[in-house]
Length: 242
Image 1: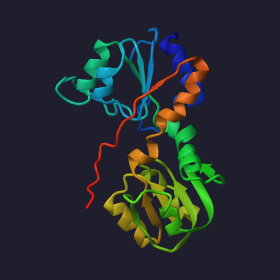
Image 2: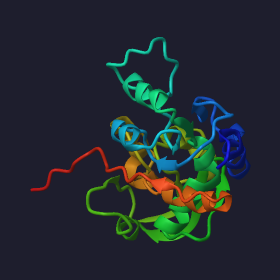
Image 3: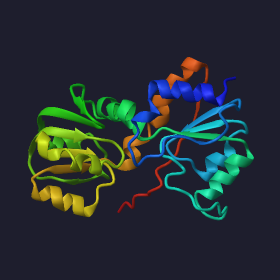
């Protein structure tokens, strides 16, 4: 059984928390570094269901930070304080690995293992793929529920970033000759902007581009003798079918 500090140090060695983006809140969010950890749970999001079902004296490692912006009060009838209360009462620590893990692992995994692109290079958090691709063939990599904006039949340079990555693409698209974007949470006005520039977009869905976070991290935790428990979070959105 390891101390929380030892686990934190190991996580920092495989995905340094210092790499997180300035607006992020990765790292230790709840807990005492000197506490001993029995079980480790991995999840995309910290939900009330997970907090209630997790064993006492455990650690939850989430991708998305439960505490993202500064809290001015802890009203246990409101989110996220309602979940924080449960975690504290059960002595459950919480570490989030968000944009640091995107940069070191998740964007690469999404590009290689989910989309199948083996030849790419990194620029910051982005995976850039060059070649000759039919746009319709790119669409075939996803299920039928995705949204897209098609500007041309063929594309030559794709920018890929999982989660909600339009802000990262906004800062680099001019200098990179990007003509197709794959990310999630694309807003209406983003589509209108890039459509005017002739750049196609595939909205890969935030959940579906990151739901494998637990699977990726679990393999590393075996190196410190933890068979992590993966909490299979379901997509919070439902899709209406005709």
